[in-house]
Each structure stands twice: as structure tokens, then as C-alpha cells.
Amino acid sequence: MSPHRFTDRTVLVTGAGSGIGRAVALALAAEGARVVAAGRNRAALDETAALAAKAGGGVLVQVADVTRRADVEALVRTAVERFGSLDAAVNNAGVFRGGGPVTDLSEEDWRSLVDTNVTGVLFAMAAEIRQMRTQPRGGAIVNVASNLGAHRQVAGTTAYAATKAAVASLTRGAALEHIGDGVRINAVSPGATATAMSLRPGETEAERAVRMKDESPLGRVSTTEEVAAAVLYLASDAAGSVVGADLLIDGGSAL
Image (cartoon, rainbow, N blue to C red; front, side, top):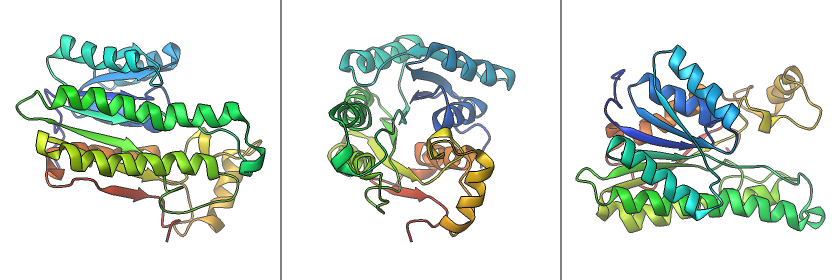
């Protein structure tokens, strides 16, 4: 594997201020990409940029809310104006709300899940595709779905799982519609990963590690770096014939 797969490539990463998004942004920067790191929290994005700079990579920070079409269109426009192209995009921004049965889910939590996890991905893909299909070498998009939804169900996560199943469906449909435009679209579906989202209320990382020994065939959570490695593969030229795939990264939990 070349350590410079993304040299002279511009890559947009949403939700880049923490967790998987930050790990993806750092991995891309380490491989030479011109990274546009987007999110709602400027301080968190600045920390991502500082970590990338410390490792010798470059990250352009852009505050944006993916639930607003104008924000994602501005993100793509900024990337192209600054760097000349948009070669790949990782649509990672997502939220978890309302752990519990659907009968107890508030309207506010449901709308937050749909707005960010589904509408945000749709808006982002649309803006990215419109740019990529104008480029001679097209582009690649990786959406971050989940092993919950299309692959398994866990009580108390039904609403979240429904939105992530929608991401998987959007990925496959858009992949079919736009591969003829030179735009490859795929998804990764992480399971429990070493981020705050996989912690139960009041649970420590040590307690999570004990729980995962029983809940995952692998016996542990995935690292953010492991998920990032899969994302970079799908975004790279090495995956040139991979279209509409949904790569599970969950230690066998959905088996």
C-alpha cells in the first residue's frame, strides 16, 4: 500500500471534529490529501487540524451544518475554489438520540436523527456528485452507515437504526444512478467503535471493554483507525471497481 495514495487529491470529511471523522481526516492528511474538515464545532475541528499539522499533514477547517443544504453546497464550493477539485468525500456526520423503545421517542429526537443522519447525507451527496461528475476523473464518496439497521437490530436503537438503514439504501441507489457519471459511491457500516457514541449512559471505557467481551465475537470495540483504514480503501483507486458496497466493520457482531 502506497503511503501517498491521496497526494494532490482533495477530500471533504464531515463530522471531522471527533471520533471516526477525526480519524479519517488524520489518516487522509497523513497520506497526502488536501483535507477539508467540516463540522458544527469550530474548537473540535481546530483540534483535528492541530493534530494533523503535528503529524505533518494539512487540514482546512470549515464550520458547517449538514442539515442545511446551503452549508454543504458552500463546503463543496470552498473545496473547489481553494484546491481546484473535489476528488473524494466522506459523509460521516451523524447523531444518536433517544435510546429506548420507539413508543418513548420524542418528536424532537426523531427529527434530529432524520435531519442529520439521512437528510444530511442526501444533501451532501447531491452537492458532491454535482461537482464530481464535471471532473475528468470523477470522484469517490464513502458514506458512514452502521451495522445497526440494514444488518442487525438491537432493542432501544430502532429509530437510529432506521436512519442508518436509510443511509445504506441511499448509498446503493445513488451508486447505481451515478457510476455512469464517474462517481463511485460506497458505505462502511461500523459496529461499536472506540468513540463516545458506543458508551452507554454512565458507562466508562473500562466497563465497555468488559461488556464487549460478551457482546462481540471479536471481544472488543473496533478502533477508529480500523474504520478509517476501510474508508480510505473505498475512497482510493485500489477500489476502482467497488460500487455500491456496504463494508461491515463490527468484529462479527452482525453474524
